[in-house]
Length: 536
Ligand SMILES: [Zn+2]
Image (cartoon, rainbow, N blue to C red; front, side, top):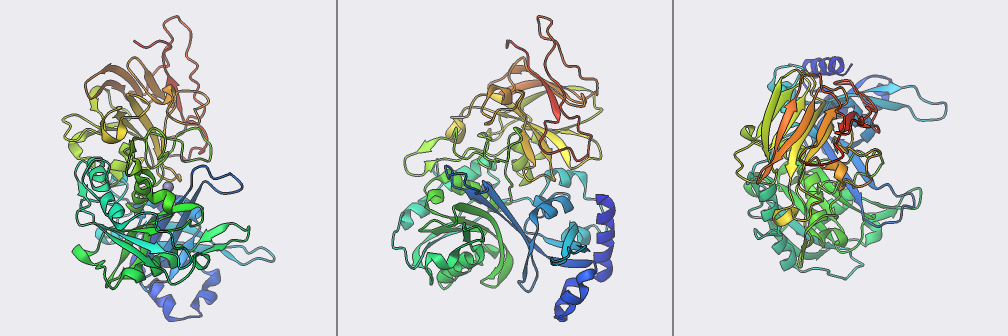
């Protein structure tokens, strides 16, 4: 159904000349009059992720929060149901900060309730304009899954004090130092993660200024008595406090704004986008909202900056509701298996190869796509952290014609400034489904999957083998090299689950043979795995 909806919406947007939203704004009563009609809204897609402070008692707090909104050209912000938005968009996160069209239809009102609206589709306007109405994105771009971020990405840190809190936890020099190019500092880290494709040159920290209001103005109670931070007020007042002295428009607009607050927010640190006009530039600014526990450690701050660059969470495949249990990835478990720094606390690990590719940082020469139906291949894969590699660093196992489900293969090693405390040297496999809240789940051979993915089952090593549930793909780890592994890959569709050397059949049941392109149930393991009992 999704392609049909997309085509219909694309046609509607083009036929209306993108005027639907503007026209409705011109008649104030039109919203009410149109309540029972399909509606088309146009604007920028604003996304933000909230991350609960680790160790917070689970007294009804969601571990993670996610907000989606559409911001039109007049700055009017319309919240979108995030579950609906994920379902309605082919790849919601690929639309982060971009101009989109959202079509909604009314659903039957309950007897006493307000009529509500269902999101039918969310499509990028820039794609429609650039491809003259073609309804499908090129496969390569769909697999890349987002906007490429390269070059200078300057940030500003704004240090804001609640008017009723005097504490200044860190100095301006500390925050300026976070942007440094030495090991353990943000410019160094993001250059390393991006293979030198971005840097943070020109990033600047601006020292403590008071907000006009006390914390209670920005952090209120929701209906359940839990703290609720008004990200809009925090952003508006903090940027306004520095606006006379900060040129947000430098270099065509800074990439992002790290907001540092001298008190707790709502128990969460936040990262994502904020669509607004600063110094005459209207765009969605990469933004983070940090309480002291976040800015005291480079790992959580980098996690929020990752969201602000447009990255969703990574996850393991244990099926629980916790997206913070993959310690191979700063966008999941930022804290465990990290390297510690005397000044900047827990340092960030790298991000998975899916996320790197999302931001356009894996060049074509380092990628290998293997399609279902292809024959056998032997591929040497270097660790994902190696800059200037001459070998492949990302393998994508792809079903032809399917863009919303595929597998990625990468190598991780316990080495370097940020990855030295990883759980091991291993091949790591992710299953990607673009429509789920955390698209990339690391695959675990253990059944049930470990609660935290730093277990042997999540690491494929020499002599071990993985087979997809539909037996389309099988990967054998043949040997180890200085910087990675040699893999035997078969995409023939005839992969067999091997017996153990002693003749005992592997207990590798396909729990759910997900159909290519289908909507597999989210909380099952759509793959079969064979790991021999003894390693060579
Ligand atoms: Zn997060």
